[in-house]
Length: 166
Image 1 (tube, rainbow, N blue to C red):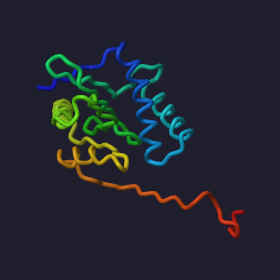
Image 2 (image 1 turned 180 degrees about the vertical axis):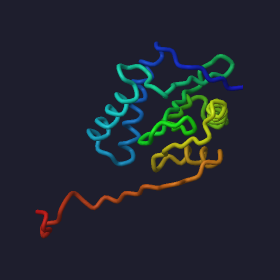
Image 3 (image 1 turned 45 degrees about the horizontal axis):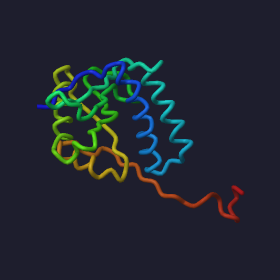
C-alpha cells in the first residue's frame, strides 16, 4: 500500500528546481511564451514557498511504496479564494516515470483524498492543462467533474494593416 510522508527540507530544494522547470514547460506547452511562463511560475512559487520554505496551508508529500519513493503530491489552499478548512487545491501530482502505467497514480490520488478527508476537507479541486489526456483520464476515472474549460485561439501576430489599432 502507498504511504505518504512529508517531504524533508533536504528533498524540498531539489523538488523546487524540478517543479519550477516542469510547471514552466507545462505552461509553454499550453501556448504561453517562455518569458511569461517563467515569470508567472517564479511569482507563484515565491508566494507559495517564501524563502524556499513550504508556505502556510501547503504541504509537499512523498509517496512511497515498500519504502521506495514513487512520486510526490502537493495539496494546499484553494488559490484566489479565502482559506477554508473544507476545501483544498491539488497543485501537483507526479509519479516517477518508471512507476507510471501501474495504477499508482490512482492509488496516490486516493491516498491524498483519504488524508485530506481525515482533516475535514470535503472538496478537492485542480487544474489540468489542455493536452494532458493521461491526467484527465485519471481525474475523470476518480470521479472529478469539469466545472470550467478555458479555450484559446491564436488570431495571428497582431493587428492587420488596415486595423484602427495600427
